[in-house]
Image 1 (tube, rainbow, N blue to C red):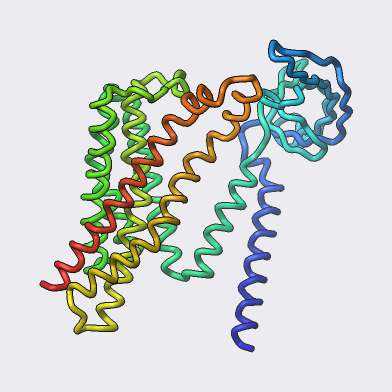
Image 2: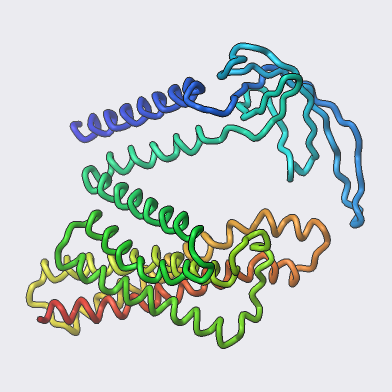
Length: 359
């Protein structure tokens, strides 16, 4: 009964917090420097229909909008404007009633800049924080803090790299990786033997994973990699890609290292007389069980982002081979390198941990 009451209390707190956040996001227009408008009425009509070279038909629509200005010097005014979008909504999305927009006002005109999407991001962020607090309590706060700190470090490095030479981005991240791993682990889990093992194995495996990826790519002279999706980047795309390999392998490596370390330390505490061989076998069993799910997570998390582009290519009668090579070559490489990191982490963590425990 007490457990049920506790769950109901947590549920009520969560719903109340989400409702409060939504209310705040709906009333915080005055905090923005950009002009915000809400859509009061929408009238939509089709204006034409066009066929492309591949016989794909796309309809084009015109919308007459009535917008209510929510902040700035013209707050409270209702302004009418016209807007156009295509059926595919690739460049312009359809606007619906009650949508919230960023707009630019001039003396005689109004230009729609973009949709106001930060409400969803704020709700998701606070939902993440609240769930962490409810499930993990103080540990959840520490985990979120470590994520924020690493995000600040990552942002600082990227902003600093703008003022430095093109080739320095990768070396900076190579130097900063140990700091990011150590801060994340110590803040999240405290400083003890388990954390030391995780930090050591994470650093070694991250560098080893990156070295394997870099070596293969260099020996093959980047053959098979298409950097067209980075064509707007003003820095050398191969250096940015190598940097993404280094950062991308961090998550999987740290997760595997901490999972195996925690499990083996727990086994050792429960069975103090367990032999090194038995502990190693236990670690191998754990590694085999988590290897499949972790590699799937790594692959699907990278490939999911390419799905919209794949659909566009295939819709325009591009061959599957061409579509695959252009849209997925970099994502597949990131996923494979990340999987290599996961595989390397399992035996290394077991070896380091069993050696330390024996000592």
